[in-house]
Image (cartoon, rainbow, N blue to C red; front, side):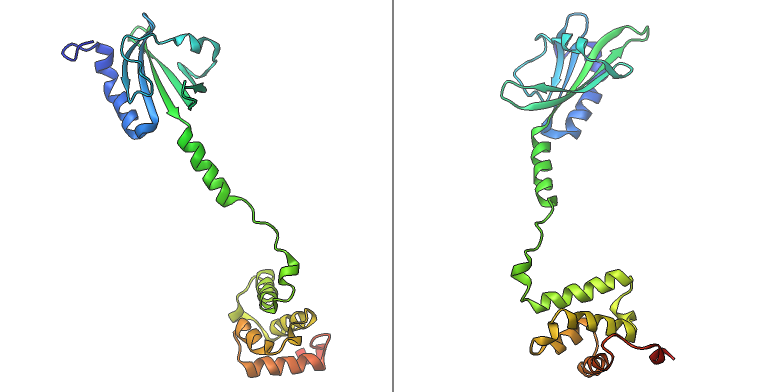
Length: 218
């Protein structure tokens, strides 16, 4: 095929083939095949040494059911160097409905599989937290209790009521947090209240270990 007098099918479909090759960059090969001679008409971004005039071997489509009218694939292929491809082929017809060419796009799956493996690694679930390593970390315990209460109640710390704070302090007390020296200032910071308020609430909690009575609400 000379550049001065290209095959009319190549002249017609060249912009489409070139656009697909440019869009998919170095990872896709676009091939236009002659259905009459079973030869390659043109190749854009070749992945193998084949060139115009080489055998097309379109017989591989005979065993594939079309996925849409005149469209086959995507189906898997393998290159001699071991690269795996996803291929799709479209039958191109003339005005009379006669097949005149087949346009194939072969996409190298390697970069996609590497990217998928990388993302899967980041998205893998984290291992359960080893409790023995944290059972003495009372600051973690404070965060767990306060954060868990926030999530359970569905409202932020700024909207906590006195009863909310008493409930959290009671849970922290049962978790043994206040047996730790200087725990109260840390709890106050976590609850976003003053130290004096924390001590006052703790004193009230000790007077009513089971929580505020009904009379307190009246």
